[in-house]
Length: 558
Image (cartoon, rainbow, N blue to C red; front, side, top):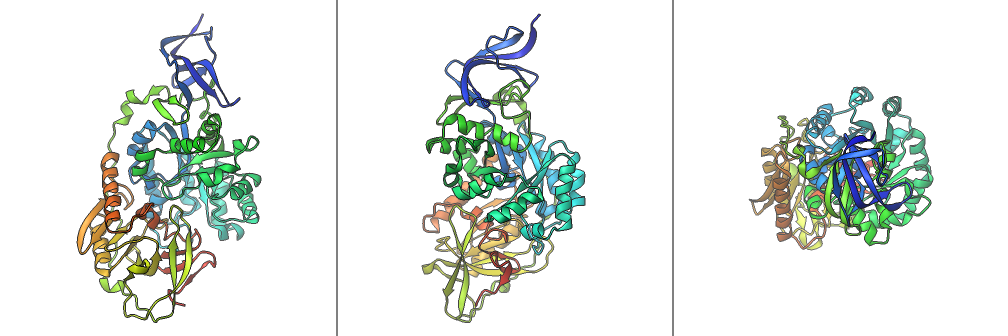
């Protein structure tokens, strides 16, 4: 007697991740899982059959490391667009909202994510704050995190990035690592700029993944040290083409794809992990290998042992393709349901009523006198989160505002969580702004207010506008509001649909081009990383300039 199943898919070419081949076989699906991948399986009979002649089928894609808050929309809205792009699972580190409101931020994201068919797996933030001196909104200890492991969607401890805490065997950090292991979970690393010796220390601490490789040699160092390596292509962190040369026939199982940080506008325009796959294939990677890296390898890295393959016992997460090389998607299935038919795509973002922008900035706080000495300047590196430390000679003045001709602009960071009144002032090069100012409440990882501009009046007005909407992105020019995107959920997320949020962000980007020389990078997300004091080389916090290489604050003037 034959067993009755929900669906039989026939006449497609199906990727077998275990032999790296496309096979002309059937897929039998029941109750959200693959039951068999045997052609004409004589033990099974299907309630319905679909003929996909001429199509290709690959496993649903997995984003192995992403801060979903960087999309600027809620998880329920993010799921709507990612599923359409073939991403059926993301593994997220919610440390952005956690840095603003702590455990409540993680719980908010978990609650809202329940509305989407997308599998949202959480790595609990290991570094809130990212470094001990940071003025962020909350502190999460091992005790704070431990109770969250009871949630089935939690799969581990997120990027361990505080290297001094590692080498000094910080008690609380190692308690977090031990708690993760005790619950049967694993630990992500964050090895930006690490030497092989430092990689060994991170590996000994318990981390087994990393997403910070920017060159082939760095990627190989990580593989050789025992890490899974997540090849990254996001809005700012465009590292895929510089690292994919590390992948070969012998080590490919140690690589997965991630986006890390990607805005909703970029996801709509070019995709998510499907974009990684498209780029990799276009630059020489075999399609079979690219789709395995995009699915099975990420599942293995995060111990999601029922995902990433189209064989018996695996979730029926799959993508039907019209074309392999261009990743032209015909339809997507999540847990046995075609996404187009899924009522779970209908949702409304959960509300979060909490004031998270609190400061008492006065325009006089923006005053920057210079004595005519050499000045330490942050130079951005377009499409990367690292910066360069420049030394510039500037004339003495009672208040430096800008040197537009030399692309030197005032930058300011204002503490916004506890109304401490701390304000950091610096000078930044590379934004090519001709007039006006921009301000943002997205500033990794503490997420204080960050702004830059050509004059104090516009900088101050941009910050005032941002404050009135409990966070957001703002452009002001000549005293007038040019464009804004309110982000009332923690100062990080829109409470609007992904379509509306994307339109607002695109308008900001378009308006920025009108008041600057043409730039080929996202100025807002680039600005957001200029405050992160764990990424080389020079950054600005609300407490002043921080030299990451030296590991200490330095004065504006030498």
